[in-house]
Length: 107
Image (cartoon, rainbow, N blue to C red; front, side, top):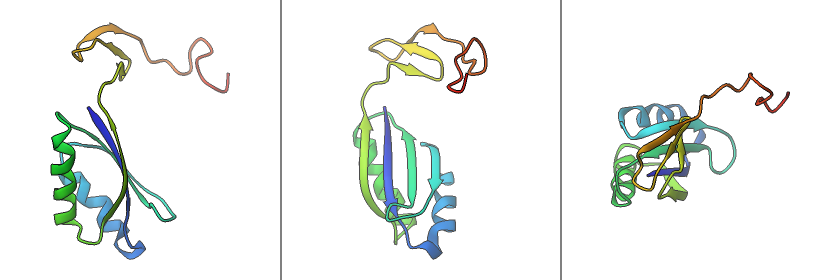
């Protein structure tokens, strides 16, 4: 399963807030931005309970981080060009070629 977390960090702490998630193996994407929710994290987890554990770890490592929202995806049907069945096993591979055969949005 995966989750996306939107957080707020004071601007002066943002460089640190972008580095800290690199120490957590579950983090797949971290992005800094502007506005009230200036930090975005995408994480891959084994269970829904892991979301709370990860949120706790982030809070311990970044005391000024405030989680504003979260979105949990319980099941994926496609991951990195692979179609998945209900158990998360690969059933088919779809080659990723965004610049081939008009698949690129600009084509």
